[in-house]
Image (cartoon, rainbow, N blue to C red; front, side, top):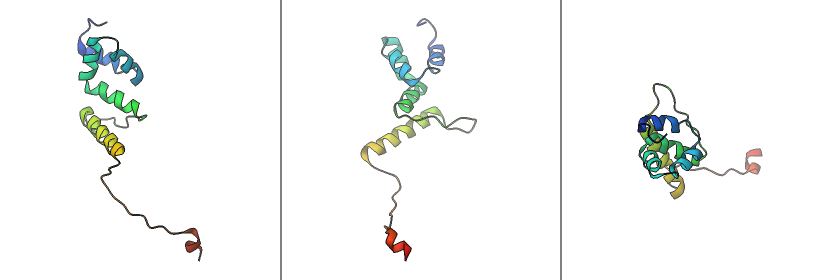
Length: 99
């Protein structure tokens, strides 16, 4: 299987679950390098590790490299508790709303 062209290997690997791609990455240096260089497979791993599903499909969807970048920014924002939009909430007690 490792004698196949890299593009064919990526086509095969993209059909695996993200955990299986991680296992394949640990199998040998060639697969480690191939998976590490593939934006699509990196996106698959990152998305799966976060428990998310890819909602992008169709002719107007963002390219995979942009989806991966947005996912990384999203994860970084959660890790650092930084959001791009700030909102204020006013507390209204239940007793105040009844009167």
